[in-house]
Length: 414
Ligand code: HAM
Image 1 (tube, rainbow, N blue to C red):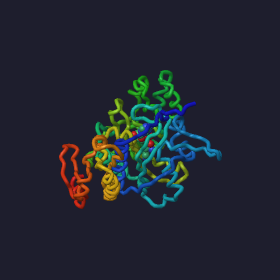
Image 2: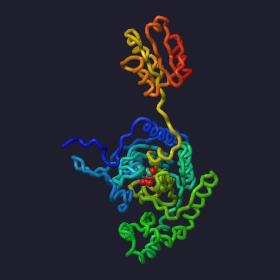
Image 3: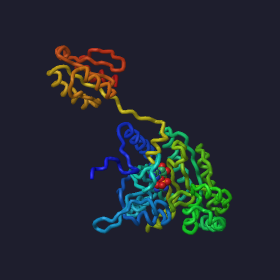
Image 4: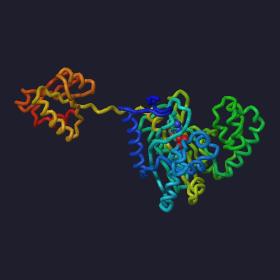
């Protein structure tokens, strides 16, 4: 059997300027993380399966359908991380970091979900991810959303809407779940298959259904906003007031429930329609119950993650490959000198393309192809005069530059 040459479905190779764009998103996020006082963190790409299974929700799509799980030769059950939050909570507990609050952690890296691939959806994708732990006040929610908005502004994100909801506290959700099930029970026979299953196992996730019939039924469903406890209502109002104070526009979407089970109170998604259909670019929320659920102490927390590939797609900030300088020696002596000159200029920080072989014409052609800005050309004449000819490849102007002036000259231009 021949070697398959296609990348595995849902994965892709990234090359050239796209890599720079990818790194730009990471570096913008990193520098904004520093401004908000976040500490960088790196975590393993795989974890014990239980870390995700128990925390993300038994009935969540990620756990039921999307995890890349396997048994190791040693008999351990391992999963390639489908998200960061559960593993960061695991890491915080296992490193004893729960003593030093508040904790602000930033990370980025690849994740794996066995989803149906389409535009903007991959099986291996990457996120930038922020977690703020140990703060129960709505100020944390406001700061986290402001941070997310800051990143989107910094990359010039296009066509972005912020959708916000509150999933309330435990009492809110218990009361709302009862009301929702009572309403949906009458439509149980016409609900989609997925929603039928969710009706008994996780009814609030039905609100997220993309099925048209489900959507029609949901139009008259009770709204969570009618079931908030006073505490949940006050919390939401404070978050909304803070966002307004900072001039962050949002729409209140009472059907926003998020796909992972650990959320409470604030849930939010920055969405964009650049993919044709609206897709979440950056999303998160509060998860006060996750830490104790995983065996740690009580600890309020909130965070978000942005899909790097999706952030790249909405960004209007472009990064171009830096333009090189081509070295074009003419003749044997010049060839030898070219090697030293190239090394000196690279040591000085210039980006140099050494044409390797061929006559002047061929090397110039290659220099144009490499998008070189300048060509440094030298043969016998130039060597005798301890100088080089510098050709500006955009407008073909040439000038003679003394070798000992070359570095200064290039520094001024490039
Ligand atoms: P999530 O909504 O599952 O949340 O993912 C966050 C973002 O990751 C999405 O908005 C999207 O941009 C990107 N994303 C998710 N799946 C894919 C995919 N298959 N292909 C490309 N991009 C994708 C979380 O992961 C939570 N852990 C966020 C969080 C952090 N909540 C609290 N802290």
